[in-house]
Length: 120
Length: 367
Image (cartoon, rainbow over all chains, first blue to last red):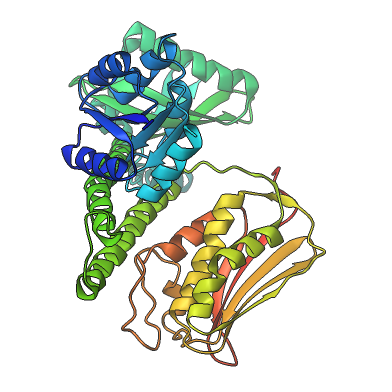
């Protein structure tokens, strides 16, 4: 069965591109545009993986990641952080217990490799 | 007037001329903290005529708390007898706060009477300038961080979009379309490098770069760079030679940063060499590791040599058409090497081309 991936980013262009690439690679893709949607959609859809942008309005990716990883129903879903800011990325990753991160501007092949590694 | 009296008056006059020509306030206090000598700069600073102040103490002019502080500091000099330099806050008669530095020395006359000789300097302007400079540096630092983040986000969208088309995910493209998209892609990569370099340089410059210093093998670093870059060297039909000194022990340095340094030097060598070879040499001499990256390329002009490691200073090599880099690569290398207490320099290669050198001390990381 095709794996479900939830992509959350407030940048519509990037959201569209990542969705397109993932669909072309056989994933079922759902999207959200802020941290609150990330939490709600994760609860509703129980995706196999979440790609989460760090800086978003309302609830940030960092906060959303923390909440998801603290919920028993969601904590086993791997999270890949997406960010344009190199500063403190390791710290942010540890803080919300994310499984990996990708720096913008990223190579989508690298993103696919990281996804493969987490949901084989 | 007797000859003796006349001379005394003359030398007194001479003495006052000297101390009154000094722009910093000067004072002398006796053991009871009474002013016994003041120059004109002192009267100007405190706005009180000298004749009025003589024989009085801090308590006659300053608020009690401030006078107590001055008094206590004077006592230290009287008791310890050592020179004392203090930075103090002082509020003038208009209510303006000043930062002043007072340097006090103990003077004992031939009868054994103790005096304090003090010189005051108003450093308020200096302090304000330092504060403004620090603020400016902080703003610059935040600005670079924000700008680089704001540049990366659209760049990510452009890069991914181009790659989607180039990789045929959105359908087939013809060769001409591919050629132009490759140009777009190469320039995106170049822009990414520029943003990273600017951020790296800014961090190094402001001392915010974190170094992971631990025992590492420099030959392993060079070997790694050789592995990742030999296909680029071969693409230009150049020979890539390693001459490594196997006796170099492990020593403490930031491995990733030196991969960056060696990669940068090799990248430059590739850019400026069209035929011949690129050689990386490592040597150990008296606890100093010496690494050389030499090429048989176009070389560097004499005028460019001293400016080579300055930021945004692109070398005018013999063929000035090639301006591919960011102009920050060598400045970043230099900062990284200096932070490791090493040295870096370049020289023309006698057989043509150029040689870039850097050294790193093996001992002395604890200093």
